[in-house]
Length: 192
Image (cartoon, rainbow, N blue to C red; front, side, top):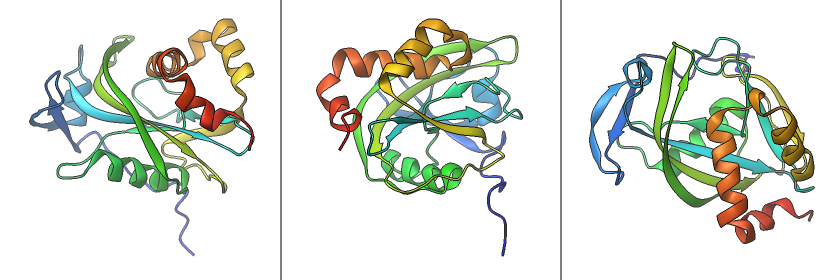
């Protein structure tokens, strides 16, 4: 049997989709070039997966990541490929990173820019999805160092007490989810 827990699923050479502030495609550029300097705006997505107890699955980014290695983040984040819908890309990456399947609900999109030391930046127009994880998740070790579930109460306390260990986009997305999409979020965070 082939061990897929450490399969390489992305590289610095893969092409990312450049977009304008209205999410219109403007071209392609390598992942490495998109993340150099202050970053170049490209399309991305973030997924928040919740279990039946209303707990959020967090991932700790792999130590080999160029940007924000070993930081805790939301369940899954990545980029669509050329010609791939954002929803299909999110489903694909759940399988690539977590060996998991979930129906996803698109909630909103936003753009942000965040610099990581002198190593580069994220500059993304990010589509945010919520989903339910009813089965288990197994981390792809090239992408993820560790996984854990956390309750909403514990997460809010963690953001207050140790904000520096979480990725900037995760904190921004969570704040907007709780402030502007509380009713949608509650469908996932209330225990079944």
